[in-house]
Image (tube, rainbow, N blue to C red; front, top):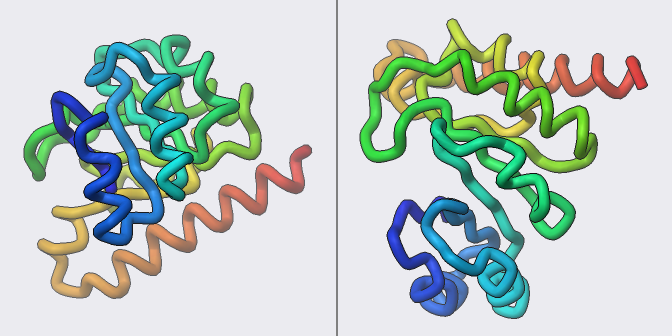
Length: 160
């Protein structure tokens, strides 16, 4: 679940009961990330932590060893079809460098034209809506996104 809500604390238990296995919340939406991370874990879910474009990656860093996935928004959250913000890639690269085993997701404007930048920066989880849904051949778009990420991850592991 990627919870784009103002009080993510109130939705942890209902989402766990509904069967969610991962709960991603926006760092900007809570005053006590540590308590929320603990609550998500106690409810049997993995923890994802998202940051909006205006939030520095260093603000997420203190929580990185307590989460399963970091999500770098590559558009302003709220609606689909926005233009990919390439200037978010240094955040992805910094996270990958500092936390090599952390799952790093990008969400917003990701498609065949932008996937290489995401994967090369270090993203290994991709959210792609419009690029897939508006495609004549969604399966080939999904395969392309998956293959580019897999190849970049293999290259990173060989470079270590």
